[in-house]
Image 1 (tube, rainbow, N blue to C red):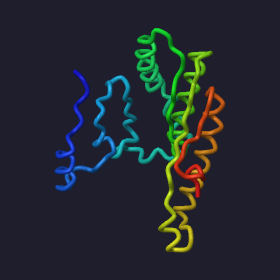
Image 2 (image 1 turned 90 degrees about the horizontal axis):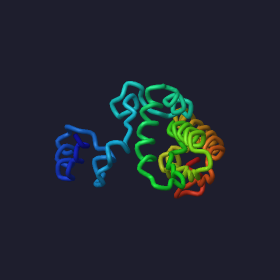
Image 3 (image 1 turned 60 degrees about the vertical axis):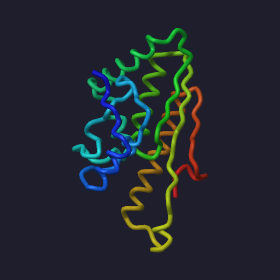
Length: 180
């Protein structure tokens, strides 16, 4: 059995307009991915039991689980065995949330398992909007906490990702790495 086909845009718009389903970025993914290239973190899905993956440590802890690590290793070896001449890896990773911890553990795994292979890591950060803050004129406690998490995740992500990568390149559409 292969991967389930992505829903059509018409089906997605009908579901959204009827209110029967939440709209997700993956609903618009027109590329059919190989089932071995996608690993779903069930506890952090939109309706998962753990909520948001918002801290670096949460992401690191995900890959401390032997079952998760073994599954990731199996999926990685599936593609590595297909290569005639493996030159290296490219890792794209969010820096501002818990996925920076996941990315740090993945690059550490690649660095340890494939010594001498290049690891090019792209640290991605979002563009943050200050529109609501400018109108109100002050930061709410929730905004301060989110900004603190964003700052710590970004700092920890940069340090850990760059230590296990051949080249680390932060990538953002704003000059502030997604920080306010």
